[in-house]
Image (tube, rainbow, N blue to C red; front, top):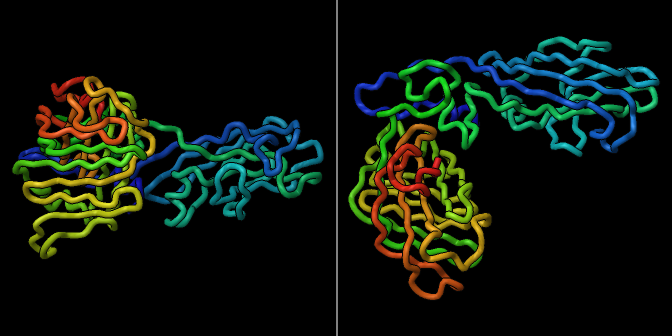
Amino acid sequence: MSRIGRALAVIALAPLVGLGAAEATTVNFVANPIDGAHEVPPNASTAMASGTFVMDTDANTLSVNVIVSAFPPSGEIAAHIHGPAEPGVNAAILEPLDLGTPKVEVWNFPENRQQEIIDELMYVNIHSNDLPGGEIRGQIVRVPSCPDGIIDEPAEQCDDGNTNAGDCCSATCQLEAGCVTEVPLIVKVLLYKPGNKIKIVSKGSFPLPDSSDDPTVEGGRLTFKTEANPTGTTFALPDDTWSTIGPPTAPKGFKAKTGECKRVLVKNNVLKALCTAPDLGALPIDPVTNEISALLQLGVPGGTRYCGVCGGEVKGNPDKAAKRKDCAAPAGCLPTSPSGAFLDRTP
């Protein structure tokens, strides 16, 4: 399932909460500036342009409006949308654009291009007589907005592509009360080693996600944060990384494995994770103020959330490993939960 598909996925609901139907979503983009400095290789052209673009995710169309404010001195000979490519890399022509200004048209792109456009892998290139390979260029980048069906953290907790109330995602892209299953965990062991390898093991009884949050279908993500780095590290756990424990028709739990997370396991009475989080900051960590939180979300953005937070005394040598045992369960997992300032920053 694509990233926008996950953002628009059916949200897991508490009993008696209604759900609005998924709607076609518009996503906005800009290319500004379109100039010689962004060409490959760069040049000092005096030509200049800019563009706005609107995607309809249901119709698979991109409405284009490119305005040339200064034409290439040697004359424009062609204009196109190229891709897929990162800035600084050339790519094939995907859609021709009209000569002159404004260039107003609709690109009916194939389904497989939608995610590439969202991932900002397209660019406008205007070609001239002197520089037939391209005189001015600009990457087509997304303009974060609510709603557009894509979750932009930390400002957005959800984004279902509409402004309807009562469907678990508000008009301001915040989760609505009663729509998320929260499972605060008691952390049995939390180990934080040099190289930023984190191991967390929970204890206690907690429920498995229901069918609407099945990670083999809806996927999930795992986030670790520290006081030193409240942005933290989030690991994507797509549906194809998950498998069931026990019979698929009556699973006893679920497990996932990625390149960064060697093991993520959730089953009755235990949650385990072993991941490498390179951007959480190096040891030693302050044993009093530097809490570590973990949040496993299944059926994102609004599905079951398993969370734990651990702080206080460090066992052993903090220069080698920060180990904590038997931490108290937080009050809740959502940002609005009265569970302390640190967990309140957990998305």
